[in-house]
Image 1 (cartoon, rainbow, N blue to C red):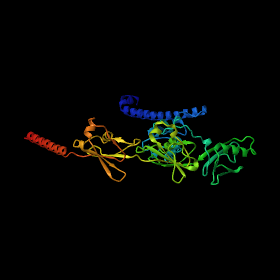
Image 2 (cartoon, one colour; image 1 turned 90 degrees about the vertical axis):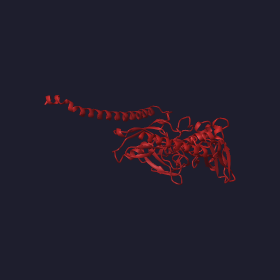
Image 3 (cartoon, rainbow, N blue to C red; image 1 turned 60 degrees about the vertical axis):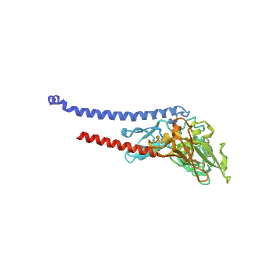
Length: 441
């Protein structure tokens, strides 16, 4: 038997190679998942050793994921599901077995809970870890862009918020949840009803501790907000995920826009904020009251906010604020160009003729560049035509001309050039035919 195996060893070689390749691939996949888990474990250990919050936004538990951020997703003991993914520009990621999920505007712990829920149909008790490996989103929450950090302890409770109470050695209320009713009260065993609306989480902890002193000598009480419902903010317009978001503490304009997935590519150059006068005026120089006197409105320049040139523009958002991002104005290029269409001004108030030509990929060969014109709408619903010599502008003999919002740059076709081009094409076709005929003969 041994002699037969030795003589036919070469027949077993493909099987050995196949097994080796499979084991090597499995080892590599397990290694990538293990490395991701080690990163998460090292972060958790570091957080427990140091009471100072991390200055790295990707490791902040309140960090909000944005478009183009790079995520390391690890599913324990499932290496084929563990991978590094970049959030797409539409704010979504694709997960095997689950499909597409909205990632932008969520915190890592929220996303990993959603992935774990989606995998429960396929895996028993899936353990998922999401780590932000690289931050590339426009509204990344860094210490420099977030002068007022979110603090749960300072969060002011309101109607419909829900809290979870932890009380050491008081089983009657330990782990109990309580919702703030419409009158602003919560009801707990042993303690009864106490007013919570209008109080910070710290103040509620103190009040509960005082009430428990008749039962416990030195009560240890902790209160966390498990559901936020009392401080809604509306984000509308050209953002990736418009909707109503509940504040979880002091939040800046950039942080709220980040939760809405950031600005879309067609966002305009201003952001409008509307606030009830009862909450005080908006602390911006552009703020003014509306005709009813009930609301204060203000505008913030997008480019200034993104570049951080005026930190005072990154105001603290208040409950019931309405943040509106209008779509950008367009400039249109039609006629004898390679790519006619409308082009977004974005944060710019105007665009030059050369810039518009560049975005439309240049002139066609048959264009009448000297006869182009700008069609501009006036306030009287009439259109004004402005002649533009594109040949002179392209050669640098004439200055570039600015285009305003909704302007139309029309580049006509040259009848002479079109006729000459058709004649040339006909001649070429005739020459090709004659050459082919001669070769065949």
